[in-house]
Structure formats: C-alpha cells, structure tokens
Length: 388
Image (cartoon, rainbow, N blue to C red; front, top):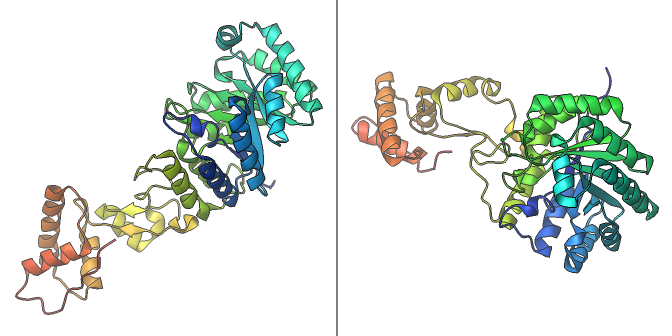
C-alpha cells in the first residue's frame, strides 16, 4: 500500500481572514496568531498583502521574523510593484494572483486572454528573477474556461512558477465540480495544486476536501472559516476531514487547535458558535437519552471523533431529551438507588423543568427535584457538585 500523501495546509487568516467585514488585527494579534498557527503545525502562513502600504510591509516583516518553522507567504497582484513590496518584507515566497475569468479580466483590468498571458509571463519571470518562489493564484478560476486556466498555468510554469492556486472566489462550486476540475488539472499539469474555497453556499470545507481527493496537494484555509463575505474553508474542519476521511496526512497538532481558535476568535471579536465543528463548546456534549445510553456502553456508538484527539473531554448534560440512563447515572454517582417508578417520575419533572427554563438542568437541580419527590424516603445526603 502506498504511503498516504502529505497535504500542505496554507493558512490565510492573516490575509483573507482579516478581510472579513469589521475584522482588523493589531500587530501583536498578528504575531500571536502566526505563532499559534506555527505551534499547531501549520505548514504555510499567508502573512498579508504588502501592497496595502508601508505600514503593512513593516507588520508583515515582523510576522516573518517571529516564525521559526512555518513558511510565510505574501499575497500579491500580478504586478511589479507588488513583487517589490513583497521583497521589502523579507519574504521568499509569493502568491501572484491574476483574474482568469473573462468577466474579471475585462472588468478589473480591461484585458483579454492574450494580454493576461503576457502579463503572467512578464511578472512571474520578474518575481523568480528576484529570487522568489512563486505560486500563481487563479482568481475566479471557477468561472474561467478550463482551456484558458491550463494555458495560464503552463505559461506561469514555463517562467518558474511551481504551484497553481485554483480559487473559487465567489463560492459557486459544489464538490462534484471541484473534484472533476482537479482530476483534469492533476492529469494535465506538472505543478503543485492548491484549492482556495469561499463559503457562500456553505460548501467551502466540502469543496476543499473534494479538491484533495481530486489531486490537490495544498489546502488554503482560515481559522474558524474567517474571511470575506461568508468566509473560507475552516482550517480545523479541513485538517480533521483530511485525517478522518483518509485523504492524506498533515502536520497539524490536534490538541493545539482549541487554543488557536480562541486566539483568532478574540482578535476578530467573533465568538465561536457553540455548535462550531471541532472547536465549539457543544461538539462533544450529549443530551439525547438514546445517545447517552449508547455512549455509556461504547463511545463509538455516537462519537466518530474522539474528544481526546483534541485534548477535550466528553460531557453529558441533562435536558428535555435526556433518558433514564442519564438520570440513573447522576443518582448512582450521588449514592442514591431509585426504583423504576422514581426514575420515571424524576424524568418527567426534569423534562418539565428544562422546557420551562429553556436550558439544561444541573446535577444539583436534578438531585433537588429527587429530594422534593421522595424526601421522606431518601436517607442519604445529596452532593452539591454541578453536572457536566
């Protein structure tokens, strides 16, 4: 059996992530995010856009100096000025982006296809002559002609580019289309292939995993799916999906993902939703009676991912959907033996409480309900610890 392929994770939180509406990172926050990414085993960090101005160049340079193992990259337009700005940051790698769809070439630059090919050859050659390792980004590749994409990448490769980033800039693709595109790209091109997906249809993670299945070697992501409009593919989801679905291996250190997400959430002033995949507080929390009963017998019944993988633990909470197993577990841990009738009575009280309170019920509140139900017969003291 062949060894699983190594997938390179390219994080764009400091570039595309900061382009999310209302998000602006201070230099200290950028450095903290970059270092947390590095500690989490992320291979490449898109550190920013030097063309923003002198202040941004200084900050990118500081981020670059803060890194030891992760490879920093600058995002640039396909212009000499942007390449020069990247060089001033002390960077050795650039992503030179060019619009490849007819609508964007015409509207943004007034170019036709021949003019864009000429620009790609000129600027990629200039960048490689400056000593830079070049990845060519194809903006709006999802609306571009595949024949033109192939011609553009071949032109860039002839001038020294070693990678092509296929960008679903408007988030319009589905996994089937992405898979088909990358099968064609990987069969026709001799360069590294990267996918950059936006989440306008809620498919960025699925599309990124489909690209990898189709032949992509690099995944462009952002922590928590941060990014323009609806955001990008979420780093924590893509990295976990690659591992869980057997698509390859990554250098991600799983137990560092929670801290990384917290740092980005605080810097972006965007709370992590409770149900956010991988890093949300409720991801390994169970209430349903059927689920809890199964988990107590074998965690694999209702957990495809082990919470321990991420340095987390399972939590069982009491609520409207709890069952007998949850109630009996709480009573047993408190040293109480209850009859089937008492458990059923208590379960009904629990459900009424949860419905009226619109929240989970604590361990002590359940024990208090039990005490109210059978105060005259309960002889053992009830503990005051909180459930969950």
